[in-house]
Length: 380
Image 1: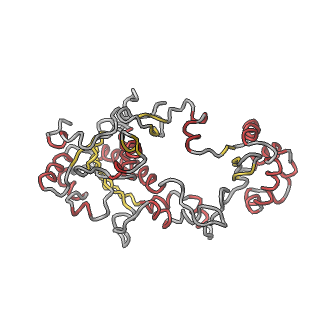
Image 2: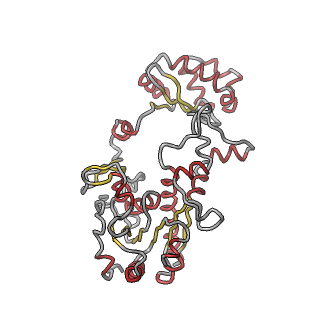
Image 3: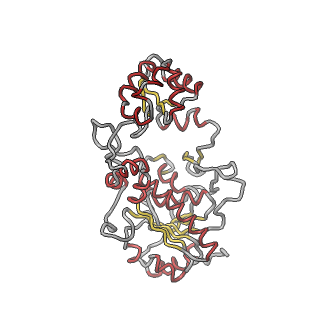
């Protein structure tokens, strides 16, 4: 555990969320020192407890999203347990939920309901389309949001089909924005004494995560699939090497000059087809031919060494195992191991005063902390 004082030390969270977006957000809060109580269905718990992959100690997926939390079983429809929940929430600073809009109100756990017992609550609602509007009650999964946001149609190669990004990026991004919104609201509460309802629509988040596509749209065009290349800069793509692909990323004239010298082709610097970044993008295929005349003569490792020495941004194309377990992450402390399950997970991605924040708690058994639900809290 990080020896320094954690940024959210003393904050208590009632977490009604499940599967991915909400649990990702509350894992971020738990890493920062918040005391997160995961409210789960009796006997079954969060669906992600039952999602693979599995080891003999349980779901590795569940561990990565719920390390550092406490688990309480509660039947949200039972009147006695509902009353106990409200008593418990009086001791909390934050509520996080990702019910479909309208469900929390039916359960008597809406923002308005919680404000009656905890007026300064910070309440975060994660949903597909937000709490209001004609689409609000539509069900949404990550792939649906990727498709509706335009991200899918602009991902992939021109001759291929629209392609889902290789992670549940809409869910994860919504989780990050939820953690940001909660932290901002906690700061606001500290300065004003007021709580807040933070509404995190996955669709809005996914649109906001596309600034380049936003710029293309604002200029009067529709973003299209361009493969691995950058839609407005060149050379910014994967290029053929003797044994695979190498990434070269050049987005300004100075770096292009360095690249042309490294390729042994200084004449490209004065070629009118490549005079500006826009020109290079318009003539990308001609520029690719010039670059690959050089790169196909070397292996990926050789090219990376050549470009590193010259100061040209580059990389091999790694798979996830190579990225996490390979030399590129040596000394970074990017992974951690849950002491209960032995599962490895990715640690908090930011550092505070040089250290990665982390909770000392292992992933919880279902209902492990029920006593906190049924007894009076001692939290001041």
